[in-house]
Length: 71
Image (cartoon, rainbow, N blue to C red):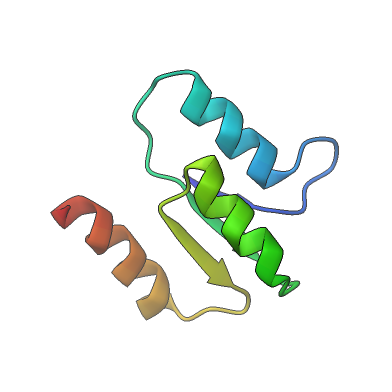
C-alpha cells in the first residue's frame, strides 16, 4: 500500500499502526511532502516498510517495492 502521511481525518501513520495491529501482513510505503524527521521515525515504528519524500522518482518507488518483494 502506498499511503500519504497527511490525509483528512486519519493520518497515514495512524492507519499504518492500525493495519499492523490488525495482524495482517501488508507492505506499507508511507510518503510525505513535508519533511519532519520525527515523523519518519514514527512511521517505521508504526510498521511501514519504506518512507518516501515527495516528489520522489519512479525509480525510488520501484526500489522500495522490490526491496520488500525480495525480503
